[in-house]
Length: 368
Ligand code: NAP
Ligand code: ZN
View 1 (spheres, rainbow, N blue to C red):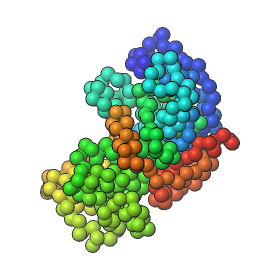
View 2 (cartoon, protein in one colour; view 1 turned 60 degrees about the horizontal axis):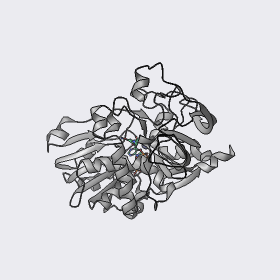
View 3 (cartoon, helix red, strand yellow; view 1 turned 30 degrees about the vertical axis):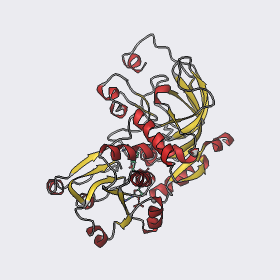
């Protein structure tokens, strides 16, 4: 269907719509506030989901404030939210995998062309026609897609996921972004028993990386700027914790890591971490600070170090991650908040003050 729309198929019928309550920001400097948005009525392959919980990702904050304007400028109004768990309320006539009443989830993507080389190997996140859950062109209604800070969402069943039944739903929502974004590079770079793994930044992504690293049997070292998070890091599964502002503590780990995952949301010195890699060690960036990071050539040359990035994960890999979480009983540590506290939550994210993911209880939207 995406290809018909992209090719400007004149026979493509725009679906009928309904109103849904949501929270949106009107500009880069506005707070999020209550609003109503249009959602399409489910077409043949669509699943309509009543949203129960939606996590707050730092990417929501970067996007609301248009901090990534050079790479993906924000179109206003924006309805953020891509860590969505809810209950299926309606399905289209061709939907086969879900039925009303099922618990279902949606992450950062809602469509891709399904035909490109990346889609064919399950890397939909790198499809040139991938559609993000919010702030991407909406092929059905025009304008841009609207995310999960809303009472419901309508998504092609190819991009709907199953949540293992034993997982707590408030804690499962963040798996859809923070979970897959840390699980995917850890698998790609072979994190396993016997490997020494660093996690930089103990926020939403970082705390999931600690849980996965621990579950995969690696020796996990957390690097934090917040000394107050030390005990939590150990409880979450870290074997060691380093306060990164302490140069002596950092020095002790020089040249020793197989893999480091950097999940920091703001400008920082990545060379300090490149220096901690062993020969052939890799540092993967998942954090996406707005400002470019400085990389000294010799940090990479000596020790054949590599520096790479990673974006979420494909649909099948996201389901694999959810099933892994079901098996190992892994969810995010969440602070459940009503939607009315979302602006306060953003302020706290900026102060690295979240333990360790905000999950919005969408029932709170009913009173708006
Ligand atoms: P978060 O919960 O706000 O956590 C970020 C953590 O970074 C903070 O808790 C803090 O940890 C550390 N930090 C913050 N400012 C710092 C500074 N100035 N210097 C050093 N450390 C600092 O954010 P998140 O939701 O986990 O997201 C992290 C980043 O990943 C964001 O940039 C987000 O956009 C990006 N992201 C990327 C993908 C992807 O696909 N690649 C997906 C989702 C999110 P300590 O207190 O422990 O130091
Ligand atoms: Zn995210």
